[in-house]
Length: 199
Length: 199
DNA sequence: TTTCACAGACCGTCCGGACTGTCAATGTCT
DNA sequence: AGACATTGACAGTCCGGACGGTCTGTGAAA
Image (cartoon, rainbow over all chains, first blue to last red; front, side, top):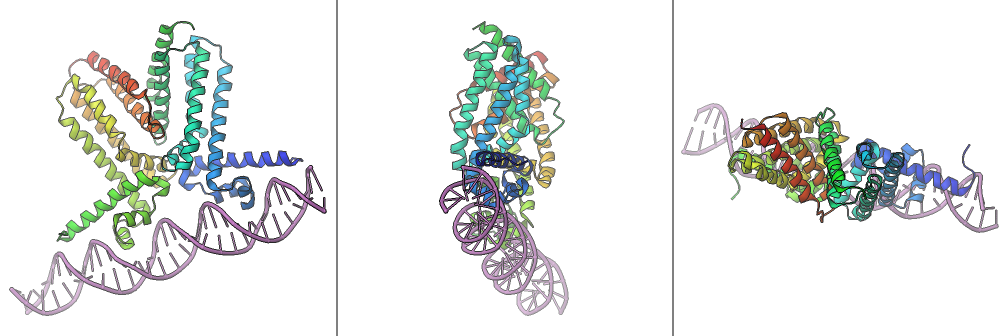
């Protein structure tokens, strides 16, 4: 049964278009993600797509926000279910690792690369990424009950390692170093958390 | 004075096209790098480009090899000028860091992302990257005189960190954590090298 | 009746690749 | 050594197709 009210219909179509955009970015990459592919795959007319997003650029800008929302939602939901304290570190790392290797992150990566040479995408992506970085740190800081610069540095090192790992994993599947490398970052992180003491 | 022999002419034009392709990848990104942009920028006719590279794909495949060559050349040249031994670690890291943040690496990154969803590019890029990884380790191993798995793991962690750092640096310029994070990897590396002993 | 979410035809532009033409370097034969 | 045929490095036009965006039509919700 289709939705009855206009608002429902509007919201549903909009969300469906954004989800489809993410799917296309994952499957075809940025260069291969055309508005026609998106509308066909979404089962929506050309008029519908351009009714919601006046241009391809606006669609991508909206997709950036959409992806950021999903990303934070996923991580926060998982982090809230964990018992707070220092022993939460390995679990939090695992949550981040999972979030930063799934399709959402992949779509974000495509837009990230595209934003390097596209000023409008960049203008939308930079503040979004800044917000994500800030909120991730807040989640980690709150869950572990720590706040020192040493912990912060180790946390940033983890994020950067996860990004590098995601990049490496795009073309390799048999990377037997990744587990070991992440464990090293977990050890660093726990040592710093330990040294910082309870907040 | 233009080159006289055909071989010289051929080699020169070919190299010029590959260099221009790298320039375009850096400036316009993969999606914005069209054959027309390349030919215009290279000051070469359409016929010339398709005479050397029968299709856009062949051009990119050749560019992958070209970039890998430049990358290894740059690193090896710098590594050879350093005094071998354990104290070479910080210098080697600096060499890698510089190589993995310059325009060559940027162009490679564009192709890397594109290869994720393009089987032919992937088929060309995967072995090329494997070779680079192998040769980089050989350079490091030879320069420091070490060969243990502990050192190898720390070295891989460094490479992955540098990739993550390059990715992060695309949209941020004021990343004040990067120096500190790299220093941490240098410390890990030197500790492992120290523990391994002379080869 | 009005509004609005959506449908779908249409247009100008640009892209990748095919094609034919041109001219200098090169091999060959005397 | 000189004449001549051949090769090959490039020039530049052309074409089918796809892309992003505009515009008008339509039917159900308000």
